[in-house]
Length: 145
Image: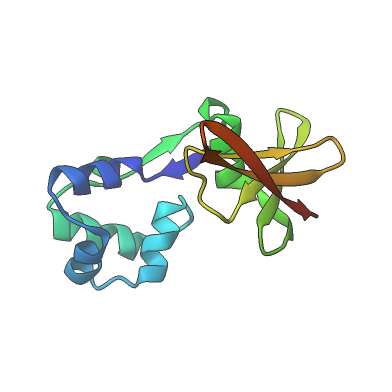
């Protein structure tokens, strides 16, 4: 089981309150807001400040969730540990239902014409597609871990 703050972000959106506004209303630091965004542990004082500022109850901003309901991607983002990192990618490791996994997260934002994939030898490729006269040419950046 873990604490999920998804309801907080939905409530902020409904009230048209940004994260910066929340920091101003509560006096919380950007570090604490980042911890909430990652579903990390925060103090009960933090929860109380948010509830007071938003005039809501604890259940309106957080809930206890079951890890088994998460997708592999969300499980890795929530419980994964950094294994290796370079300028291009981050390798995150975790165990899910007894199976060990390693996921590569790119540090670059992918566009519609971008493909990021990993070969069997653990080499991650960032492939950018360019339109030239009706055909696509490919350029790959090889990022080995």
